Length: 137
Image (cartoon, rainbow, N blue to C red; front, side, top):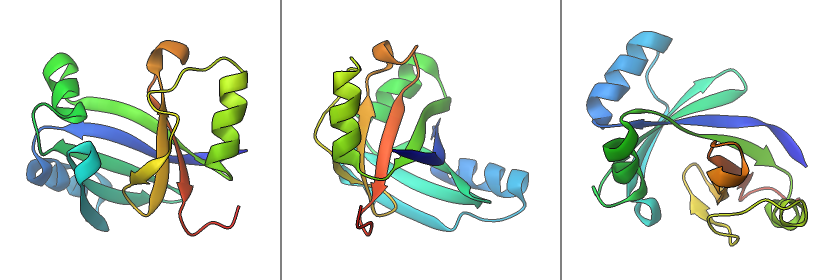
């Protein structure tokens, strides 16, 4: 079951400059930064009420964010939804006819299991499903 918008991911060219820009925009610094080697990114998270903004800066120009920025420039990359049970949602969404970039959840930033639906099956929007690794659901 979908619970909420967990975060909006924004691709940025320079993590330091973007962190400063969003610090000024939100009036507070990011609360967490981490490198996710499997995705070739450095992430920074800003908390905004019950949701977050995730900045994604590439560590490899050939990685997903590097390719995204080269093709489309900086900007909104994906929208992430928190789910109760990522495996159950993958099964349900496959039955509904949605395509996935990968149907096997992997470790993501902020202590989450993640997987992505292919934008061709979601009207051009990259959708991320995420579940807390601490969740019992």
